[in-house]
Image 1: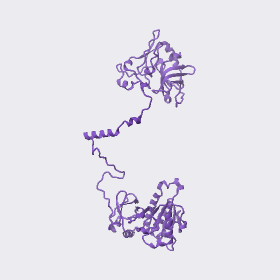
Image 2: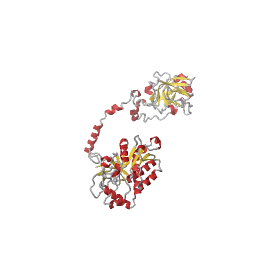
Image 3: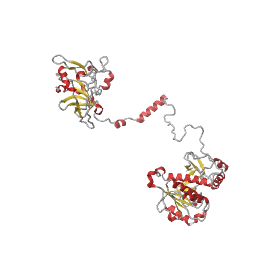
Image 4: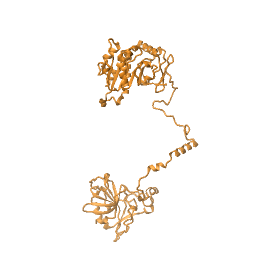
Length: 506
């Protein structure tokens, strides 16, 4: 009786993991509980294999889409024409020999393929099942199992759910017919033969090359120019683009010269935002610091501010967060700090203390003197509490290149120090060491600088530094605005949100 189902078109639901298979029954084995489909479709897509065999354990629902009659020579036609049981579509099967039969409407398959016959053939299509076929349908109540032959499928043993129906209990569903005809939009969308779909992949790159984007944009601009649909500007005018730090709405024009000095500046600089920063003479700069100290900005405060700003700049030059983090303990940077016995040297010692607090290996060079300035003595007392190393001989300096050299040997006064043997030895060591040099508050005269610097840090307002000073940076040491006004400088802070800013020569 199992052979009576050969040639029938069925839909087998194997659950969410395997999906829905549809095809024509080619073999039924009652002993091993298997059923085979020829020319199968998987979820509406034609399979690559010619035949698929299923076991009972993986089938959750089985639907009969088409049953061939006993004397039907076409066996319900080619599978490509009636494949997957489209609603209301099928082949007319005649009644049995004894003249009795049962009319069944064909059910709807939820995963039908795209092929749909014409509307003229979709009217009053019924299936007649003879009593002999009804007797053989009891076999379909048994379990069927899927034997997957394509790659990547998993076997899943599930019992046949109670929702699977006996062939005799197939209930008709809405066929989508209206007044005996299918809707034209369905026919237009799904009416093509599935075998006509090409097997080759679509050439996206080749088709994209056929698109002339320049010609299309030119046509759009021509149309907008003629019709006047462009809201503002001309077709060739590009809209203004602003940076993240630029204000779109400007209430008043920008004044770039906000600092005016009493005498003509020998040299002018500008910031990244375009503000002009004029240089001042050494006498005016010395007077500015003297007035600030009279108002409470003592030398100790200036040393601390200078040490913080210089150490912050040095940390950035050493690599910043990429170099100084807990994961890079094996890359601890080394800084050689060269200081003289004056206030500039005290500024360098303050910078070395802050660098050592940030886990930088600092080697401080300071020559031995019988009497030191009080500011140097105080800074050395604090530096001795850190892990920094202090040396007084050039022989104790590293033989290998260090990461950074900070130069605080020179000062604006006490020119006799440059004739000392220790000074010449330290200058020779710095010039032979291939490390970059940062100078803190260097003097104006280039001839007085024995070491060429890559960067120089000016305090408050820059001095007219030459080319040997390298790239000039400016740091804020906390001088109030009214102190500038007292010495005749019309001052407006150029620092913005920073304490150290770069300056560019104009």
